[in-house]
Image (tube, rainbow, N blue to C red; front, side, top):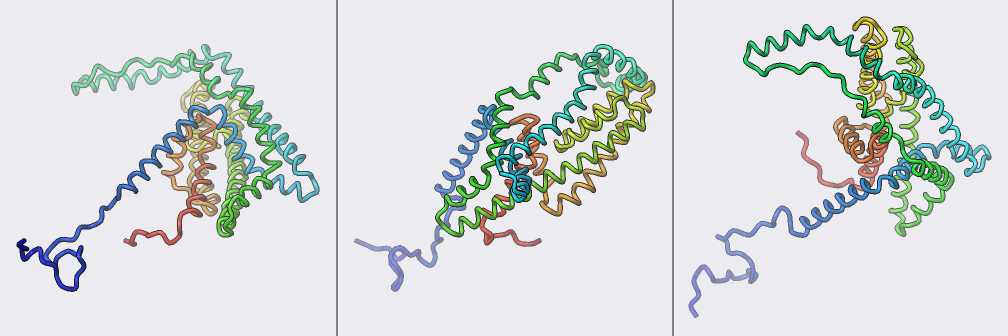
Length: 370
């Protein structure tokens, strides 16, 4: 058999080594096994999201109880160090928190019930106040007609109020969800130490146990600090909003202040909703547009100072939260679980950042500095 010169083996080389003039094959950037792993991880993520969405009635109160229980567990530990049994301390803490929430809801419910009974009358008053914009709208239509645009903006129509009952049904959980939340919260706080110990002892490796202990400790500290700090900040925002409403002559300033403090627990969406509420209430309560917008403008200044200076200065030192990550987490959890998901978005983001910090290897390759 004749052997071509290019097919001869070079002495001293292996049988499978390429010739000097040939191009060695480079390994693929993404191997088939890595692609399969990515695909399986994506399918698992989709399946988890689908289960959380479909089984919202079960997972939402349980996850809410776990997060709030982790936030309140330092208080139970404080009572336990003062010779109060942990089970009794858990019951006392839940009763105290429930009393505070009930008081805030009572402050908010009184004006809401009064105004909801007068919705048609208030809607007519608001429509009369908005006639002041008829002249600018007419000028805008004339300008559009001059430049050859569309026929113009349609006449202003107030939205109908059939959305009130479906919205209240969407915001109000069922009695079963309430019961599941409270029972899970009490049992979680009462047995948190045993759960921690059982979770840590699940791993046989000492390093894994130490890592789990550090993760749990950091989650408990950060969530507890987050709840305390955000609560104090939101109380300050509510007091400032109530004072502004009182100084500007808005009706029921205490209820509006309590509503501002409550909505401020929901990042981004809460302050915007409160600003819109103050605009509507002011336009209905005052004869002039300037007087009606005074409280809303002042509240906008308060939330600007709180969002850009107070909260980043206090919370940013403990755990930096990227603004884009906060927005995406808020959008995702609000879509998944509604208003309660919006409340849970920041705590769950904090938990995710802590897990990322501890579980990802520290010696992972980093991008070069620019």
